[in-house]
Image 1 (tube, one colour):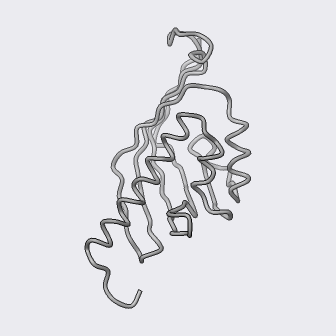
Image 2: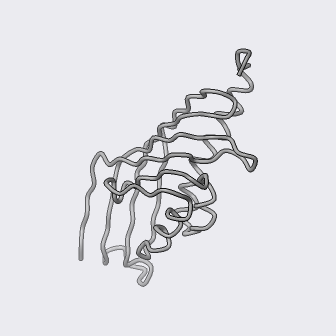
Length: 151
């Protein structure tokens, strides 16, 4: 970028990047894996909070990982979204995640049964603007703490 970015341009980029981050959580909770994987670039890098030692490389690997995820009801609360605009096509972000899930509730309306999980953590992202909009080029999840309970 040759000239300083105007404040309105920066705000528009921040808004689009925040929408990308929130869309990720919404699509995950709905189990729309194909749409979720489309939020990533073709050559994206991804580290999940579920498996912080496993690096997934490519949109296809990310999609296959989500398709193999156990069936469960999930809810993400995404907050403290901080966007650092680097240019008109690049940004970095950090967001806090509160994640809860219950496997049994897919089969039974009682939330007292089944494996329950609650995690608090964050994502650090590298975002890029492509022809189809803002995408995750890199998404790294980290866990601060987790609580699990089994029936």
